[in-house]
Image 1 (cartoon, rainbow, N blue to C red):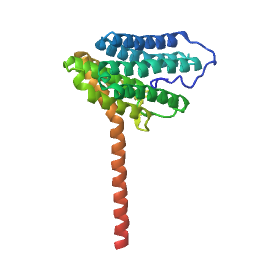
Image 2 (tube, helix red, strand yellow; image 1 turned 90 degrees about the vertical axis):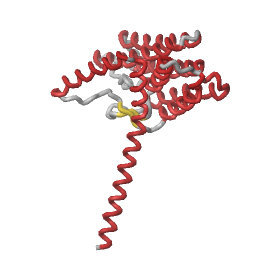
Image 3 (cartoon, one colour; image 1 turned 30 degrees about the horizontal axis):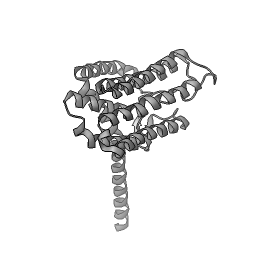
Image 4 (tube, rainbow, N blue to C red; image 1 turned 180 degrees about the vertical axis):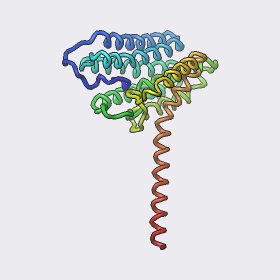
Length: 260
């Protein structure tokens, strides 16, 4: 199931089929499938946009389920299957047909790795207890798929040929695949802690963000995607630096005690 939702822990009956969240999930699946068809027909811009639309509806279905109290075990399983298609198979086929096809076996193996790690990512997420965690463990698969989609949009905007991006995309696919199954933490945004006094500032910030995205969506969405992907390793590196500094300070204090 997508990491942007929380109907992984069902409160409803096991066989309950909740219409509204399931319809939103189906729209997400349809967008992912349409992205595949567009890529097969050579319309990669449309395929990338369809992937982003799929991610939007994928984020909505879980929130709607929580707001309406209609989360269910059926919704969890259905969402996981749809996510594998929309954020595993679809981006893999798109990036393969866009540029990785030029690398033969290495290209389709990279595409398969992306699908496999997406499946592993979803399976691991489904069996984890995420109710008390603010962060994801590993890169969410919608973010990984969105990074591929926004990269294609960015290259289309700057008129960068797919062939010239071959090695870059090959490395990107391997990096995204690793990050999805890694233990690198990523901010989830599922339960943001916002005080009442700061809600207005957050609302203003969201309006400004929408304006920035709407100005040049091909560029701004790409920048946001890259920043989110890089944020996880940056946090890990920052924590390692703090830990090493703490060890150095501790060793210095111990040595000074022995000298005195």
